[in-house]
Image (cartoon, rainbow, N blue to C red; front, side, top):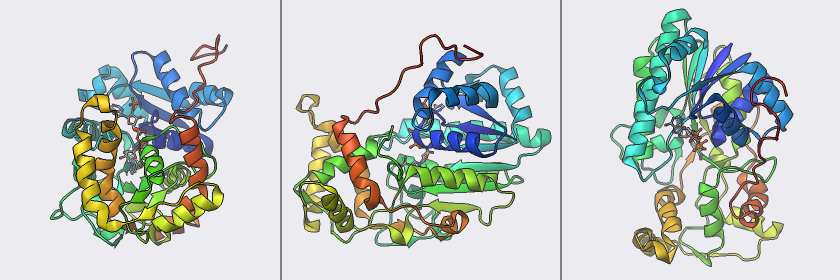
Length: 380
Ligand SMILES: NC(=O)c1ccc[n+]([C@@H]2O[C@H](COP(=O)([O-])OP(=O)(O)OC[C@H]3O[C@@H](n4cnc5c(N)ncnc54)[C@H](OP(=O)(O)O)[C@@H]3O)[C@@H](O)[C@H]2O)c1
C-alpha cells in the first residue's frame, strides 16, 4: 500500500501521516512545497514533531516515505513529468487534505482548493487507469453545509445547492466534493467533514493557532454576544486524525461521507465557561445575545481599520468566524462514533489547558530545530 497524502506539513495532515506511519500503510507519498528534498524533510519535521521524537520521524522519513515536491496551484504540481508518472504508478490510494482555509480570499480558495483538487484528481485518475485505486478520501469540512441556524445536520442533508455559503472557503470545498464524485465515478470515495478542529484532547500543545486565537480573545471579553445555550461543534485533532486513518484503511466503509464532529454532545457556551472557571480561569463573561448585531458591525468596521491601531487582524479573524460562532448548529456524529466505538472527548474537558498553552506561549509552538550533523536522508 502506498498512500498519496497532501497537506502533511499542516495541522490535520500531520495527524494523518503520523497515524498512517504508525498503523498500516506500507509507504506514504507526500506532496510537499519545497525547493529541495532536504527542505521538504525539514518542513515535515516542523509539523511532525508534535507527534514523535526526531529519531522516530527520521526513521519513518527514510524507510517509509516518498516525497513529491510540488505545488497544488501548478499544472501537474509543477513537478517533473517523470516524478508525477512514477507517483501515479506506485500510489494505491489518496488522502487529499491540503487546502487554503483563507476564508477572506476568493483567489486563494479558487486556486488551491479548486485548481489544486483538480490536479490531485488527475493524478488519482492516472493511478486508477494504471492499476486501480483502492480509495480516494477527500478532507472536506462541515462548512459545506452552507448557511444554517439552530440545526443538527446529518451527512445526507449536508449539501444543498440552493443554500448560500458563508465564504469562498465553504463554497470551493463544496465544489471539491462535487468534482471528486464527478471525475472519479468508478473509484471508492470517502468524504470526511470535520467540524471546528481545536487542539488535542490528550495534551495542551498545538501548532495551529487561528481559531485558538479567536477562542482566547473571546474568553477574555467581559461580554459575549452569544446566547449561553448556543452550542459549538468542536472536535479535537486526535479524534479527526484517528477517524480518517481508520476509515480510509477499511475495505468497505459503511458510508460514503462522515461528519467528524461532536454532534449532539457539543457543549453550550455556558458549559465551556463553567469548566474553564472550575479549572482556574479567572472571570465569567456575561452572555448578551442582543448585542450580536452591534458586535458584528464593530468587528466589520475594525477589520478595515488602520494597521497602526493593531486591532485589524483580530477583527478580521472574528469577522470570518462569527457566522460559525453564532449559528448554533451541530453535525450529527453517529456514523463516526460507531466506526471508532465512541464520540470525541468534549471540548470543555481540555479547553483550559489549550487556552493556557496558547496564551502563555504567545500563540507560538516551541519548534525544535533539525538536529545538527544529521543528514536529511541516509544515515548520520
Ligand atoms: N482546521 C480546521 O478546523 C478544519 C475544519 C474542517 C476541515 N478542515 C480541513 O482539513 C484540511 C487541513 O486543514 P488544516 O487545518 O490542517 O490546515 P493547515 O494547517 O493550514 O494545512 C494546510 C496544508 O495544505 C497545504 N497547502 C496549502 N496550499 C498548498 C499548495 N498550493 N500546494 C501544496 N500544498 C498546499 C499546506 O502546505 P504548506 O505547509 O506548504 O503551506 C499545509 O500542509 C483542509 O482540507 C481543511 O479544509 C480543517
